[in-house]
Length: 335
Ligand code: NAI
Image (cartoon, rainbow, N blue to C red; front, side):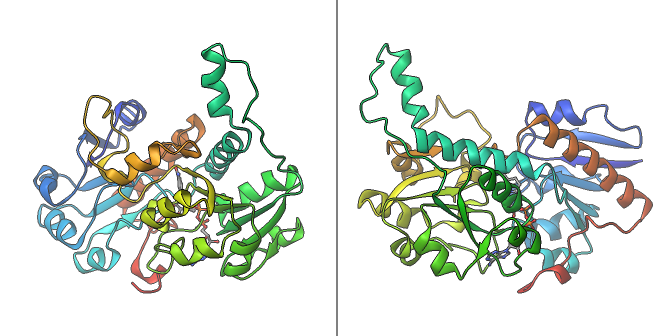
């Protein structure tokens, strides 16, 4: 029976995993796993972590010294794990490669449509007894050009939705998908996608290559007044550059479900606290910026999938089985 320590847990994680297995025992910690919390892993065989736990070389060294042999991610992205160090310290890394890509794609759609039709403003206005339509003019997606950066599982799900809405879809991916070409998605170079898109949505992983893929230069290439949507990872976007582009109206609107410095903010109730992050505070007061706190994945269907795959990962770890859910250095360039 393996002992697993869960980090970054919220009540819904506890509810999902408590009593979920007879083959493993679980303990739940609210805190993130990072240098300062290594000692909590003493006596555990594995740790189960989420998007904002920092699995650095130092953490991997520390937890392996405590006897931990598994890092199981309850998510798909693994940019927060130093895979080279995991190999060095003999720690196996596993993840949940897919959990309802449609959930994230549908959240991107919700963000896009909110900004397009200004329903965030209409909601407040009507509640205040103001039934005027003044300044609520939106635009129709049908016939607009939407650029997709990264056409993996989530990007493809979003392309299918947009295709149904009659949008023209341009995409940039190093590995174009034939299935997407068949439905009419046109693959172009990055700059052409930036130049021609009325709406740009990011669906590539965070890697050294994609870090700040949206920066001062790429923002200047984008169509003036375009919309940017990021449901992928915060560090794909240079936040300062985006704030400047919003201020000078080069960027028309922004919707983010992820944020560069989200680990200090997201998944917590800070409503009684002073927010010390000036960049998110600035973003929060633009009328044309919509922020959600990393909830793209958060549907019942995704949670069920995360639970099922994570429990299977624990079994495979315990039984020493190989798995397609292993993440290793060999999978990544620059590792
Ligand atoms: P995936 O691995 O199926 O697809 C990623 C795609 O990006 C691949 O087609 C790949 O070729 C492409 N890509 C890689 N490097 C690129 C580059 N330099 N330029 C352009 N394209 C590049 O991943 P999936 O499942 O579609 O997820 C995408 C990202 O969404 C994840 O890495 C994660 O960061 C994020 N995500 C966000 C969630 C949320 O709750 N907001 C939940 C789940 C994932």
